[in-house]
Image (cartoon, rainbow, N blue to C red; front, side, top):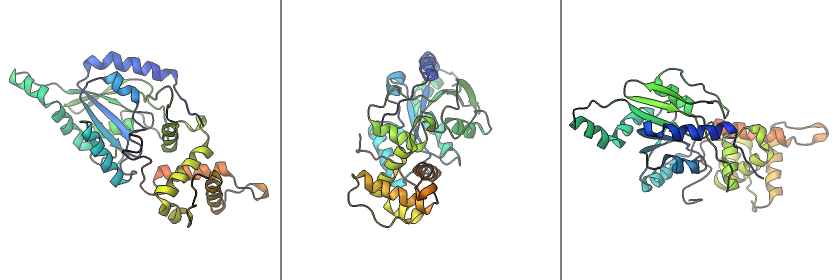
Length: 290
């Protein structure tokens, strides 16, 4: 299965970011805590170069907390400050400004020594589609400024947003990259909702999700769908399809002739997984692909 998505507005967004870099003090890189590496655009390092950066692991309330802690340590080894947050509830969001100031302490102190009153920190917020940028901006601003949505591609243009008197944020459209060299990255992003469903095969994505949960979180499938036995050979596609059909049977996804509607079943699996109904999970761990 090949997943590719690179709309023209994303090429334009990259050029706009590069054109604004000279105005930026700090970059806020927003990742999905469930798939931090897969949701990290490999072009970002190339575009942003050595700009000070804080990494936010958003949707941490949906991710496996033990695995998230591993990711925080992973980024720390890369000399990057990583902060798990939940932009919807606001958990840990109040830490963003203090940490931003700490990252820019050398620059702020130098201005104060010269008798210059530091201006508001100019931050650039970047992240892939549907990672929660607009929700985070509205939370920081304390009001609805940026348009939000539960699907990718909501933000279409750049805009400066004031966060009190101490920070200004430059919002940007989500940017995906031209091609996923590792198809597992595309699968994980599709599973977490970063890619429009019209561009993917739901059956394929749900298949990979079920196989992963059978391997890492089998108890969740038992609790939610009554799947009591894990197949011995998870590399056998028939075994995974049998599990999906069992879920479809229990959820009443049956077409005429008693045939299981796998598309409807897949939609239910993905919807419940993304909503957290299957519990907190992470689809990748440090060391797995790092």
